[in-house]
Image (cartoon, rainbow, N blue to C red):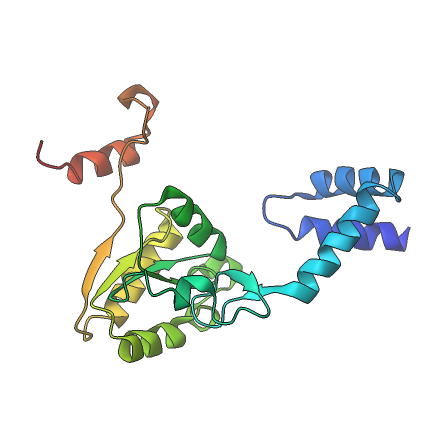
Length: 197
């Protein structure tokens, strides 16, 4: 059963997967070794061999595309960089089609509870990129929780002596939603961030 426990422990390390969910996944994989388990093993090996994080922005790219297409495309605005917590955030913003600049993934956020401080984030490479690439605007796209706000404030403080315009993603009500479904903090931020009509 040691192999099963190792499988459960590995699955439980994935974001959003608790111990019980990991046990259910592991059981399902073991029940179908030639189907799901074989396919997953092959996909994991291909990901390990062929995928990595971009050396510049941190987004997911193939090992033979360094830096990634987002960093090398001449069609993107080279004056604006959007700072996100995770490579997945880059993919989500790209799906929206609303941003055409460059990205920088921090690979986390400040979280004293998890023992993650500034040393765990890609801050030195961010500062180097701002100097080397000549960005004139930095968009902070960290999450709106306490840790994300602390991270954004920390970065704003780091950049105060840089000659860049600093902005933060707008907060407010989600599309196709109403006031009745909003929590008080979101509603307050929507009121504070109101725009002329």
